[in-house]
Amino acid sequence: MRLKFDVRPMEKSARFKFGNQVWDNVYWSLVWGAPIWTAWVVAYFHLAANGWIPKLDSVSASPVWFARSSS
View 1 (cartoon, helix red, strand yellow):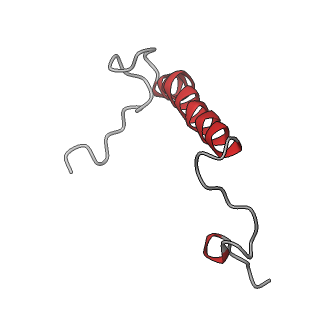
View 2: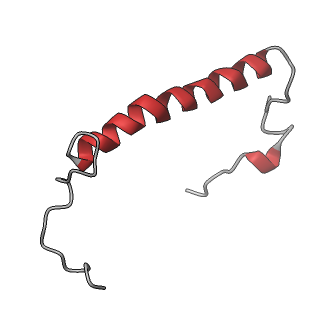
């Protein structure tokens, strides 16, 4: 509660790698987040394409995993 109404700008601080919270978030997202997520997606598609893990072929085969909106 002591810092709830702190008027200092949050994005400028020496605690961040670039001194700016926005650029720090962009850096960590692109340097760590995107490559790790890409590796998981590539691994999944590789395993599914070779038949080593199950994949969803049709709606009738896996109705629980598909949702239909009533619009």
